[in-house]
Length: 512
Image (cartoon, rainbow, N blue to C red; front, top):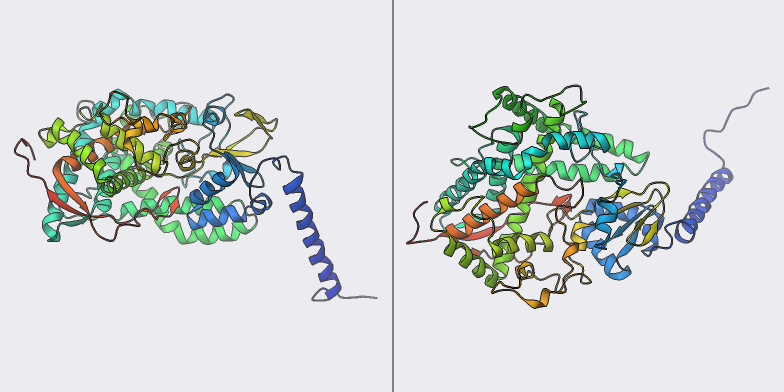
């Protein structure tokens, strides 16, 4: 006696399976909304049931805007996924990112390095401590002083290139964002790899800035997909296949340049860069210092992070200053009174300029270049954060953009007011901003995993912005009103920013 299985299940069996699945989904939704340990935290019900709403806005590049609206509706702590909450409580900075034992990074937010060696962004625990310990001297105050000629040289090349572009354009209209990208990319590749890409020289063009932004977009979407097993396998294979060529090229370039820099050896007295402290101290065992692969991974990570963050911040600052012309005039007065030539504008001389510093801070506050959350995972036993017990295995983070723009923490949060960062003795101090909760402002995060390159970023921002202000009179070109309407994938997407540039006549000028 024999029998064969039907090719297709019977309608009754298929209906049973569909009904069982619907019942399972319904019961799961009821549990997640009403009985899950995170059910006590407010938030939209659909987000509590599924990761799909969160993923949709990640892929659309507008998650930071949506989270901002959710915080306005539900308060400082919002549930944004079945297992995740976000907070804009200033006290949470210490509890999440400083208090020991340190909360680990959410593994789903990490992009594995192509060469298998971790960077400071992805390394955990002792590996992170070892790599940071080996590289921290490259980001010290002394190192910055030694690196300043590189920063200043590329800032000078930017001004020279802008002058050439004005002549070429005829009407003086220049895409400032594009050349800021070249300047920051040349600077950080010079510091990270020992040689720049020379995007500013002559009439060179450089598509690498777009290629490295591609890394940010790819990483965002890839990390999002990892949460949807087994769909992530198929989508991941497609995405990996479509992007492999560009990613392999970026890694090959980084590896070749790092190898050339290491071959030059100790260059003390000639130049200082991010590689200088580890020359002759490479340890391929991975027990101390860094390996060659880790140096390559970190060099590429520094390039991707710095060129994008600095370009976005400087472009945004230029736009906001010219949307608020009074603020531009105040910065002009500070810079042009202080300096008599371009050569006087250095990393050292731009420290302690209160209005310049306030402009940089307010730019970072109103539009952080990386409007992302910094997710951490609460241990199994749970953790008290800002006075509230958070259940174990919860993902929790502070969104940099949201905490710096909340009307509960800042006066006129959407307005561009550098004055909020001035001391009471400054002529432009405004008591309107005394109630601002400055403890919320942590643009480089805090704790042992804070941004190691913050001093380099600030030095570049001060020197480049000051030199542009000194050298040119700028007017925002027409059609730029909606320039701030940008998508964000780890960082805000680059967007052309057109200005009328006119070289400034200065009878005091002693340099170019």
